Amino acid sequence: MKCSLADIDGLSAQIENLGNLEPEELDQTWRALFGSDRPRRVCGDLLIKALGYRLQEEAIGGLKASTRRLLERWGRNGSERGPSVEPAKTRLKAGTGLVREWHGVTHRVTVLDDGFDFDGERFRSLSEIARKITGVRWSGPLFFGVKSSAREVHHGA
Image (cartoon, rainbow, N blue to C red; front, side, top):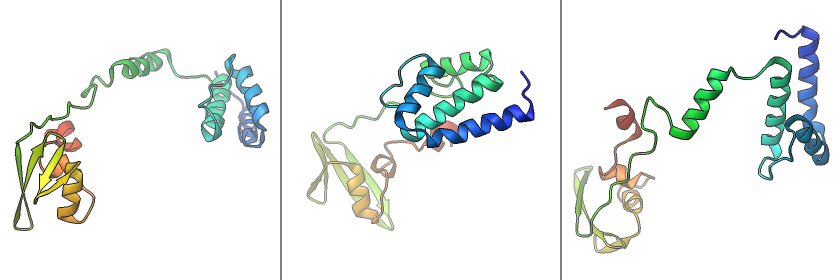
């Protein structure tokens, strides 16, 4: 479907005007465009963007059917090119010892049933310990080598 320049200008003005509408007018616009009541969680900027997209879709067309099917499949199953879900978290058994050298100092952590022991002090997470050692925010599992970075998972590094 091909739109004239005047049609596109009118569409642009209509989309820009969405930000000036009162909440009830936005709800009426939603009902007119989608044929249903607006979901409660669709509000604010998301509401304006959804309405703007729908106006564009009606004026110049939406996604090709093949693209829509692909997105729906990915939404159900995840990407076929990579893992469909995040890799399972490593479960550490109580009594397991973790060792990490940082700036020439060897740090030892013992896994407990309900946390971790480091230097005789109990911590709820490895990230707290990594922060104490480095002075900055770290992913504790990544710092202690019990979780691969996203780069390694996706690129085999």
